[in-house]
Every structure is written in structure tokens, then in C-alpha cells.
Image (cartoon, rainbow, N blue to C red; front, side, top):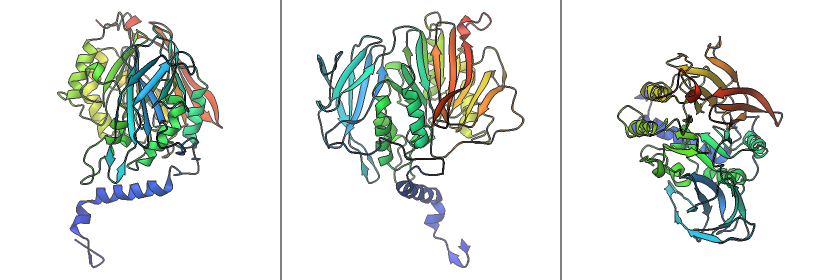
Length: 437
């Protein structure tokens, strides 16, 4: 092919996407997360720790009474957690494992994992990692029964707006954080995974963070790095084994005895007959709604969306076609998604229409990412869309009892946490016309 009397090499023509990805990596390396005037530099991201000092500490729940402690050291260190119920007094120690991974020219630090327990519910534990007494952490376990408080955030990134969101969350009374994809926005530039780990450590080391992946976690590069989700899987190990899932990209867990949470993957095979579909079908069939009246699902790409951003994308349209019937038949109560950088709450929906037995759909992709807000909504607003706004923020869900929960969305306006939307939800189990058999 010729352009301006010059020959364009066939390699370049065949690898346009590769060239664009490499350009994006170079851009990320030099630009950081300062993509617009709205974004300020976040705090707590500098690597000032010693070579064997634990950093990027975060925890996730494993079963009903265990916790996975994850952290990184720049040099080899002991994969050990010591813990107890009093500060500085550790009566139990557990040895775990460590690993590293390569991504292009990057080699990760040593990623440590230790599962501790059994633990008492609703209890504060103090702990140290790698036998390093210079950094003591603490966490609180989840309650054994309702009520329970969740924080829900999506598309977090690491900007000044992210910082603001995290500061607001730090003031909240909550037991667990749920994140439906797009964590670090590293986008191939691996040191951004490290800075993200340091950014969220103050919160992620104190309450369990249960996450699933988004499109920014894929990080697959044709020819150069063919394995997707390398960094995500290495750094954010979720309890997929305990739920019978074959993949870290989708899993489920029970919390507070009466809530079942399902994390699905928008960017791994979701077609009927796929491993994910079969696992989801089996997982839903195991739920006893008399014992577990609340069922929540999180994934990244929204099935319902009145924003012009990410409208009718493949993952949204086809995942809905494949899985919506399953979730409707199981009477899932609420679905949280991200991807669209705005907030939107829908009424109970099934097959594109309001349906009293369908799940409430909530888009919460406004955590603070560098790409900015998705400000353009369709006009007029669809009847099924109840509230929508392009503002950074986070959500809180308090499940009060087996029949009632309160959802509140808090926007980050002028660095203040403001309640922008609130609604009471009733579990479908308690609805006489929708009670699943």
C-alpha cells in the first residue's frame, strides 16, 4: 500500500493495534494519571519502604471465618503473618507462599499470600507481615449476621479524585468493600499497579476488598504478551476455589449468613455452555433463599445504560443475552456494574422493561479514574432509568434484615461527601409474587 508516494511497511499495517498499545504504554509512563485538569496527584503512592518492608497490603475474605493477607516486598522476605487481638501481642503465626511475575521488561516484587483463621466474627485483629514489627496493621472481620454495611466503588484509578473518594470511604462505617472492575488503570505500565497498591493500602488492609476485573485489567499485547489478566491474577487473588469456580475471574461467597455475592467476568467467556456460564448456573442452584434471602451480582460492563459512553458494546449486549435469564429466574436482587464513568440507578428490570421481579441495576463507575466523567446521557431519559448523574463518588449498601436494605450514593462535590441518591430496597425473597421456589 502507498501513501504520499511512500511505502507503508506491511508489518506496521498488520500490527496497528500493537503499535497503539506500545504508544499507550509510553504515554502512561510519562504522563501518569494527569489526563485532564480535573485530576490532581493522589497521595500515598511513593515507594519509600525498605527492600523487605511489607507494602501494598490488602485483605480479602476466604470462606466464612478466614482472611487472605496479601502484600509485596521488593526483595525476598518471609511469607509470614503474625496476628492477635491486642496491638503488639500476636499469639498466632501462619506461613504462606510468595511468587513473582514478569510482564515485558518488568519483574514484580515478591507477592506474598497468607490465609489466616479461623477468626471470630465482628472482631478487630492486629497483624504484622514478614516478621516486620515496624509496620503493624489491623482489620475487622465481618458480622456473623445482619445488619451488614457494604461500600461499592467502580473504575477507581489513582487520581486526586480517587484520593477524595477514598477519604470519604475512610469516614464511613462499613464492613466490606465491593469493586466491579477497573482497579489501577495501570494499562500495561506495571509500576502503576505498585502505586495503586500503596494508594489503597490504608483502607484495603483494614476491611476485605472483594473485586472482579474490568477491561483495564486485561493487559494482553499481541505477540509481546499473550496472556490476559497476568497482573490482576497475581496481585488480587480472590476466593474462587472455595466457590467451586475454575477461575479467579469469577467466584462467589456468603457473608453475614444471609447475603450471597456473585462476582462475574465481562471479559472472559460468558456464552451459554462456557465454564463461567455452567459455574454460574450451578452456583445459583445451590442457594437456599430461606437461609440466604439476599443475592447480589457484580460485573463490569453494564447491561442497561442510558449514557452515550460504552453504549451497546459487545460485552454488555451479549453477556446480557447469555445470562440475564439465569439471574432473573434466580431472583437476583441487585446488580452493580462499572465501566461507564457516571452514576445511574435503574428500576427493577428484565428484558429491557420494568419488571417487579427483576434486579435493580446500578452503575457505579465513578470512583475517580483518569479518563474523566461520562457526561453525555441520552435524551429523553428512559423510563426505567430512575436517577443518573455524571459525578465522582461511591455507594453504600446497608442490608438491615432479611427483607430491607438501604442504598445511598455519595457524590464527591467540592471534596465533600454528599448524599445524592437514596432508595430502600426490598428483597425479592420477601415479595409474595417473586419468591423464588
